[in-house]
Image (cartoon, rainbow, N blue to C red; front, top):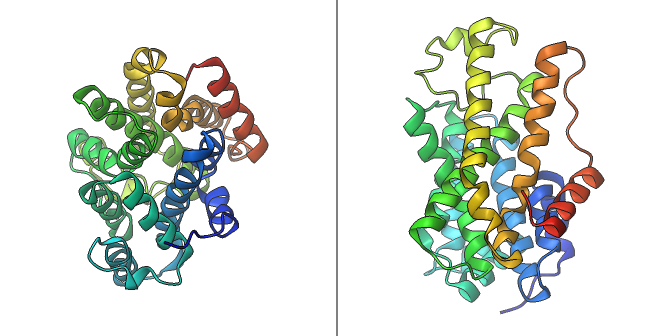
Length: 277
């Protein structure tokens, strides 16, 4: 199998999945390429809603990814560097098709503007998408599958997924936020002003949920070896993301600035060096 040049994967990963990309660069050389390929794959999926105007066009792109990564057919991936690199990673690490399928499927809700019915549905959604990416990174890193690891990846997906989604709220509004209907049933409020008290209360509840999910697994993460903890390094950005949102909600001034790339790199590298997330 021809290896895709790293340069063909780097730009998309850095632009849309910088936390996963920077974590991947800290991996041992034998794992680094495949973790970067996973970051580039996540970036491709994340970019779909911004590239299409209609949900059907997005669904067609998601189906292309299902076909491109299907075990039985490698022709669809030909010529696409990220798809080719992901197929190689899938083969090298026996990445489960059901996890990859769940990651792809999780992006369909954003295309249609569907929101989870309740907190359980939100947890399942995040577990499939962001949590699935953590599971794949763990598999690439050789972390054994177990009940504990399943719980950790679910909680990691919830904490990280919510924190990065919430950081975009001041600039983009709540239309794409996965706010459960049990927290906010009124669609007019979801698409309305950002300073509505009910909407802000729902945002606060999601922030609390992200913090609680991270706190729940930090003791287990602390007991892992450095290699086992590597797939979870993006969690170093959960608290900074939520702190930026909290600062904005108190002062309502300028939109909270995302960490610069060098700031993200330093936080993730420092978390790796200290062994604390």
